[in-house]
Image (cartoon, rainbow, N blue to C red; front, side):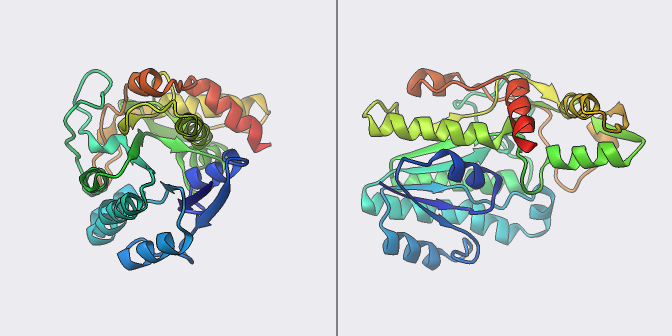
Amino acid sequence: MKILISGKTGQVALELQKHLGGLGELIVLGRNDLDLSKPEQIRAQVRAHRPDLIINAAAHTAVDLAESEPELAFAINGVAPGVFAEEAAALGIPLIHYSTDYVFDGNKPAPYTEDDTPNPLGVYGKSKLAGERAIAATGAEHLILRTSWVYSTHGKNFLLTMQRLLQERPELRVVADQIGAPTWAGTIARSTRLLIERWQAAEAGAWGVYHLTAQGETSWFGFTQAIAEHLSAQGKPCATLEPIPASAYPTPAARPQNSRLDCSRLEREWHVAQPAWQNALRECLAAQH
């Protein structure tokens, strides 16, 4: 089996390269190979490689930057996924694509299900929703996996930023009124492998949109506390933490207050369960050393 993966150096793509070993030949494309803002390049790469499965792990993920460069965000997040899906449909192969909790406005008091109506707050969420709809419109077999608060030991993410700031500063103020599930990129990659194995074994559930995050919930403050506890256990210096409301930390893009996603459909349909966020964090941190 040939698996084409976009987003070579991204958090999820890096973990996919670790976790999909043995499933087949991985064709991993980065920015040097593929400019996602140019549909003709996407088509050329898919047609050159003729894969058996496409995984689009690339995205414009700079949420605040997207507000000032909406054209680029929509090209990469809104148009490109649809082009991948068109090419997948032409080959008669499935597409796996990753989306986000930002397609919702965060006003619901309970975790969001796949049946809830999206209502994104900013350019990033709107562009990701456009990508979901572009994929669905092609009729290609697809899995759109919505996740949240993704972190890993690579790239730019909340975990690495907080590890650095906790050791650099005496005090740190962190938002405590936005709730979600921190999700390790390794968890996403592992679940993706299981989904591929189910499909290969003809045990696939229905195609479509699914939620895929770690189990449980916390705030950014709670996530930071867990990171701080790990640093302290290693005898490293650690900032004093102060919880603050999101209103005290304004950003160009509005964030959902509630980012919790109900992942029960994925477990029910595909028999793929997710770990508690605390357990995944421990595993990620253990792999960092």
